[in-house]
Length: 276
Image 1 (cartoon, rainbow, N blue to C red):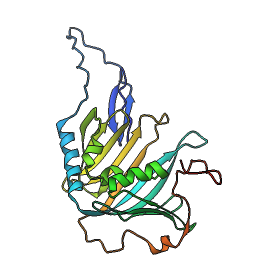
Image 2 (tube, one colour; image 1 turned 180 degrees about the vertical axis):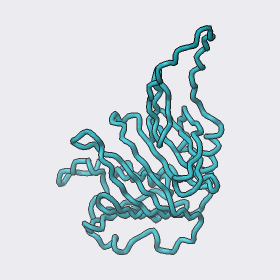
Image 3 (cartoon, rainbow, N blue to C red; image 1 turned 90 degrees about the vertical axis):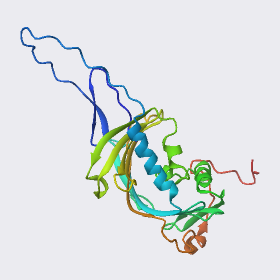
């Protein structure tokens, strides 16, 4: 999501998915006898109804689907030694069935991974290393996503779109929402473009004008001093498809070498230590 920039003495320009300050040009000389004009009033941002309506419509379309599948291509920036960030890309094939089934198969610029949730257990599988972590899970997608993050730092950049109430997650604490315009480039279709922000994140969202499905989200987080950008492009949407039995588990993963389902930065427990 993008960080909101409100420059003093400049203009707020929304272009190519980012807000940037542009120094205004020097004023032209006023002809003799011309009347001076009052400067325009400052732009005040708030919750523009059109942007809120578009966000509600997209959220309602997703919430109404009992099952869905889509492709998410995520691009995230990471600092480099040169100072300029490098971009890494992952592709996830996502399938879910409400209220308690999820599968995420991820490939990209890093180790491949597979994640399965069958309503009782969550399983994270690293196919190249043949390692698997399995843990009991709460009986809903929303609760499972929180448990996966809290216990093992597992996070999906499209989580806000697959919860039971996407609007509740996306609109939480909003202080800014406005309509930017339309695009005929993103997602290969006509999209309505909005910007939203709260005190944690600024996001620009492309929403299909006809089907009200998200096509791209760009984000910058306020706590990130480097202002690194994250972007997710969505395609191959299928709402309410028939999902074959066995889609939310993996026999190969079940046979892999087990490892603890734990936070990657948590220090290992000393041998013989009891659970807290």
